[in-house]
Image 1: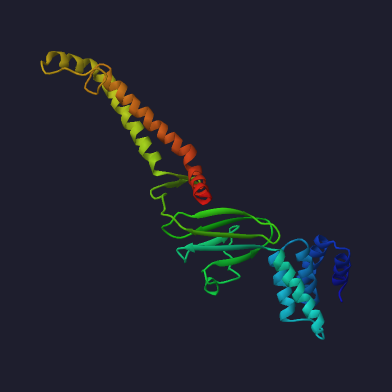
Image 2: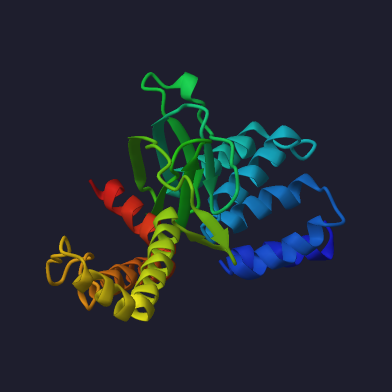
Length: 265
């Protein structure tokens, strides 16, 4: 046995799993000794790295140390089962069935295929910690949640992806600006233009209105050449500007908030 594996064995005996992981990871970069994979599985399980522990145990079981007894293999299988039992299990059943699942930004294959489950759910075995889960499909709004995994916990979700309500939005600087922001900006510009035009031309319009027998404007309306049109256009401009500002400031945060609300329901 190499010096690194002997050191790792001593660390495991002292239950210093974190140091054992570091030592064994360094050793296994230049070695493929089955004993190293067996010990690395134990070390990973000791620091709750469930997926890595199972992968290491499986490498040992696929090619065990020559001359290993059946009793030793049974102990390794038992350790593997205990590591799996302490993991966090995530079960998802959703439509459309071809949606992509990202866990912590990575597309992980499920441990249990939906065809193996009567209810069509997919299952993942994860480390017992916090995970970010995103399910997305083209033409649908993504579904998001956070899983606060604890040893042995099971988190199950059953949902359908909703329609994509972000159609027409534009991404600027990594921020998604909703379509109604641009509508508000257009209203603000149009209202400001009308208000300025009326203010510049109000005296001439007033003279023409007074000279006309048919001119009888309602005060405060767009037909009033003195003040009403200017006030109305200015109000339109302010409303549009407010809508634009709200869209720019809050728009990028509204979609995740709405998604969280729908998930809670």
